[in-house]
Amino acid sequence: MCDQVRKVILPKTSLKLKNIDKDTLFILYEDMLLGRSFEDMCAQMYYRGKMFGFVHLYNGQEAVSTGVIKALEDQDYACSTYRDHVHALSKGVPARSVMAELFGKETGCSRGRGGSMHIFSSKHNFLGGFAFIGEGIPVAVGSAFQSMYKKQILQDKGLLSITACFFGDGTTNNGQFFECLNMAVLWKLPIIFIVENNQWAIGMAHHRSTSFPEIYKKAQAFGLPGIEVDGMDVLAVRDVAIKAIQRARIGEGPTLIEALTYRFRGHSLADPDELRSRQEKNAWLARDPIKRLKRYILNNSFGTDHELNYIDIKVKQNIDDAVDFALSSPEPKVEDLKQYLFAEDIC
Image (tube, rainbow, N blue to C red; front, side, top):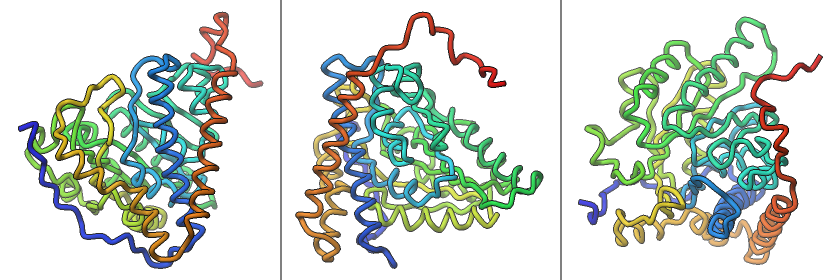
């Protein structure tokens, strides 16, 4: 069974989106390239002994993070999983802060206390990564609830803030998933549930672990829209995300999006990745979301090789700067071991 390629019927998309402009395309391309380059550098640093613990990379899934998060406003929230580095970068957390956190340095976004699976930034409304599956969904629902509470009870006059909640296919057989869908629909919370279906839950193929593989159809039981999208097509993801955001923003409640995608590396950097067949991997590698967007930009004359090469250089410099910053940053002090355990008195 492990050597068989799962037959996934993807939605017919052609990387076309109405009203897309050059500036937006370049932002999407740079964000995806930043995510890929950052993760590749993480692998290098991990194998050089600069990072410790489990590190789960996002290679191949960049179109989902970029397509959703770059459609949000700064005031909106994002909630992640243990595969959280790229979500944080898309939400605007500086590469320096994320890299320093992975190195366990005091200058990291979680002061070196969180590491790879617990990236967090209050400033950027990034609610964090979570080490256990399904752990972030109730937190995201709580975030959406406070947005609604501020609007309805505290009479906040600003734009209703949306929460984007990311999780994997393995989470959708977890009780918290169903409980939170029900609660979000019941209270019409401004939240988008994004299932990053990368076909594998660690070493368990999705179609072997669930009696109903089409996750987006599970939305029907709770009365919210369920949408399937090609998660290797950033413009397709962005299109459905914009519609879901608009729906939530005007008070019509949540949407469940199932993005069909694939991780190009093992479950973590400690995973030898021996369970997936070469045939399956190659079939998905051929649909690399970054290469697809680059071809779209060039073929439709939105940009030139020279312009895209400039973005490549800019991203490389950003990553190199992040590594240099992390290497030169101080370690947390032993005497501060118990710091940040409780809210500090600011009076």
